[in-house]
Image 1: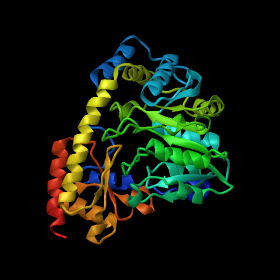
Image 2: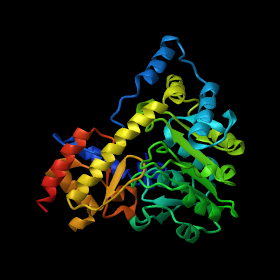
Image 3: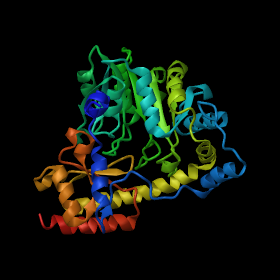
Length: 388
């Protein structure tokens, strides 16, 4: 038999493992570590949502649903998007997916041809680059900078566009920086795109998590943008439903038709129990969102203030549940800082380079943890930085 390297997909072999997973693996062999690594809410899924899932099982609702998802579920998504974000879709423009990651995957594969370029503002979540490559596309990273509050500027977008540009990824609110885009800022981006055929993938998984009185605005809500945009969202963050694996796409029917074929062949349909739970979340979960966002906001302010008191410069995030402090002030690469903090200070955070090379000098810290957990981590970080 030939060597596996000759038998397996070249594309798959060329992908780099997730930089986030490296630190998770290091944690497996350690004890007494305070981890602030995971973007997973520390809240349990609200009881009324869990109860809806349990009730569906008790009633024997364990069958396949339609490929796109339960019609009631898709109608509730449309109602939710209209109520919360001023987006108008019908149930035939919605696909219920296995989390937001599947939604991103099928969108990219439905849109891209070999060699198409995809503009990706970085730092950003780790999945866009590899999924673009697996779909035959070419990632074109555009570096966002702290001086611009880690936002995509129209000037940088214009510089990145070529005749091969097919798609722009809009990862806002942003993981790992916590940056958001206001309506005026999105309008500037939309103005660049309107005279082109460039499409948009708007990853809005953190749409409900904005602070300081600022509400998320979807680029799809702007004039002339709906017809070129695939909106991706889900339930993991807003409703603390990570393990339920519920996401969805919202897009014009011609795009949805192609994504649905990919979903049909790869997935068939999303978990039925999770869909019944998600319907309850959409119908009666607004107050759960408000409560959790208020808690995250308190943790956000506490963590940012705590880091600054330690002499660590920190951009104030306006969305998601991460801070992206500048650890480069300690004169070492971010990965070295994070490894030393882990082994010497017993605190786990993620180096900024896990989210793109431009993340060098920064680190991502999640505040999807309890205040007590964050307080303990800050005390340990304080002790560690005194040794440097």
